[in-house]
Length: 204
Image (tube, rainbow, N blue to C red; front, side):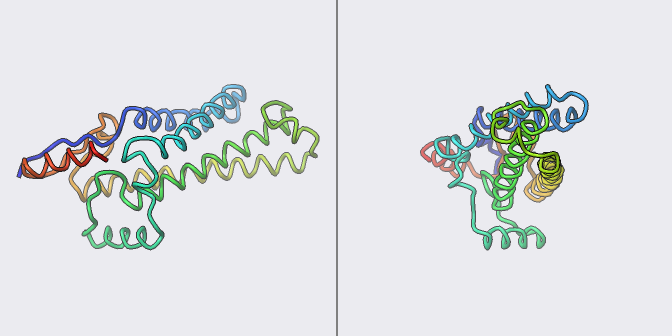
């Protein structure tokens, strides 16, 4: 058996991933003291989310939602197998990773949406200002509290995601962080098996 490199993650998906990480952390840090920069980061995040939704439909195989969005039953079964150290190896996202992708997309979207509501209600600025600029202080502060909740919840999901990446990397003897940088995963396979996998990756 030889170690073979298989191309999994396309360049646009990798750029999206690290850009989203950078912008979310930047927005989280600048929330209180640099509102303008915080808002700009939020708008850029909305653009990234829009790209990811489109890329999840028309992108390469492992970027598409149909490749990794599984039923709750499959996700639960996979997590059970992880605990029993018998989890199946996936070239793309495993079922738990796929569920985390969806959870992060939803949570970040809600963070951005309520951030724009807060910005419109408190600063009378942004695309939603015309809809919420006349609401009272109580509602404006409610927007802010929900925005902060989802921001903190997203940070929790990020922490769980990091733990999941570490566990999967250890169980399958691969560096998932490196694969999201260079696009490749390494697997143990014979030469004919590796060629078959590569052909399958290209055609799908």
